[in-house]
Length: 115
Length: 112
Image (cartoon, rainbow over all chains, first blue to last red; front, side, top):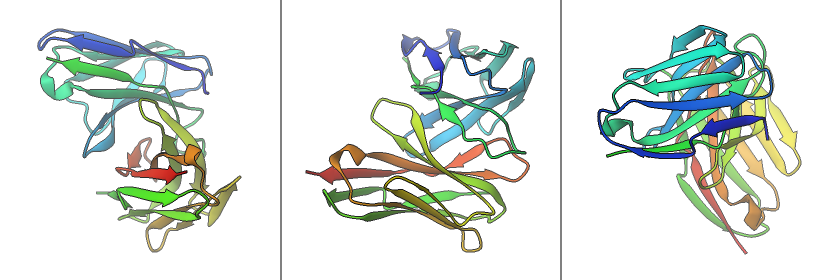
C-alpha cells in the first residue's frame, strides 16, 4: 500500500458543525487530491493540491475548503456540514500531475455521516 | 463534458471463466486511462494505467486495452478466481487537467 493514512476513518456529526478530515502521506509525493464517492455519482474530485500552499478546486468544491501547510498533510474542511455532504471521502496522491503518467494511489477512505 | 460509462453495472460469473469489463468515454482527448479495483469498505487499488499512445497494458492475469478513436477500453481478466470479486472502476485523465473522471464501476462476483 502507498503510505496514505486518512483520519478519522468514521465520523458522525450534526448539521452545522465544522468538520476536518486529514490525509497524511509518507511518500513525499507532490500531488494530493480529495474525492467523494456517492452512489449513482461515482468518485468526484473536490479539491487538489500541486504543492505546499498550492491548491485548486475540483468539480464539487462548494462547501469545502482545503489547506496544505506541509508536503505530507492535506486537510479537508467542511465549514458548516450539511446532510448532502454525507459521503465517503477519499484522499489520493500521485508523484506528478499532467506531464507524466504517474498513477494516483488512494487511501482507505473516511465515512462521514451528517445527521 | 467528459463522461465515463461502465457496462454492465454488475456481473456474476463462475470461477475459471475469462471475462471482459467495458469502459467507454465520450471525449477522445485523454491523457491516460487507469483501471482500479475497490473492495468493500476499502480504497481504490490501481491495477493498470494505459497512456494515450499505448494500445494495451498487461499485469499477470489482467490485460487492459485502449482504443482512443472509438472511446473504449476493456479490462480482460483471465481464469477468474473468487478473490477477483470486487468493484472495478475505470478513470480517464484529460489533457491539461489534474483530475480523474471516473465511471460508476462494474461490481464483479466470481462464484466458486
